[in-house]
Amino acid sequence: MNPEHSGAYVDRLANAAKAKVAMLERFRSRRGADDPALLQQQAERKAVSDARDIREAERRVARDAEAARVIAEKAAKKQEKVALAAAQAAEAAAAVRRAAALPAEQKAARDARYAARKARQR
Image (cartoon, rainbow, N blue to C red; front, side, top):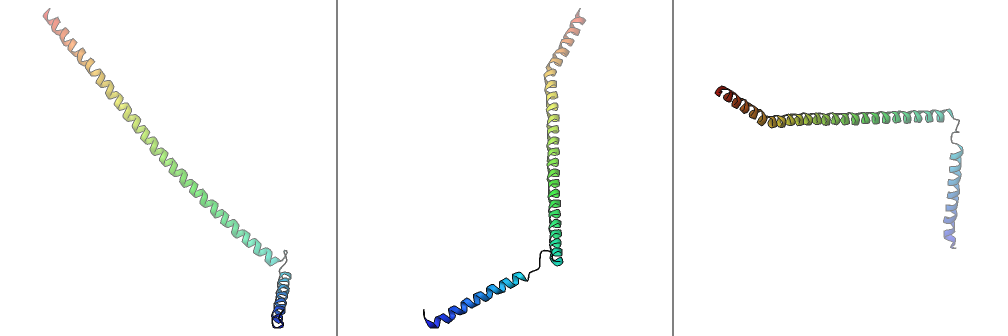
């Protein structure tokens, strides 16, 4: 190895060792799991998370309620259309019955006139 480069190599090794020591010190100086400030921060985060979950559930319930209302409205419109179609079908059936009964009524009236004319002639 070149002697002028060995100083840089040693410096890099020393810097790496210092960085490792600094990280270890930072890790050791961290707050413990039973630290009141850490516990309070965790409780606040949990409260925020719970509030977010509640809002999300409320939005989901509102969305589902709106979807149910739309479905019920569509069902009512469809039922109204079915009722209208049934009424139209009943009206059409009555018209067909009247149309079928009309020739029979006309024949009965004609037969009655014929019978009355025959009765007058006797």
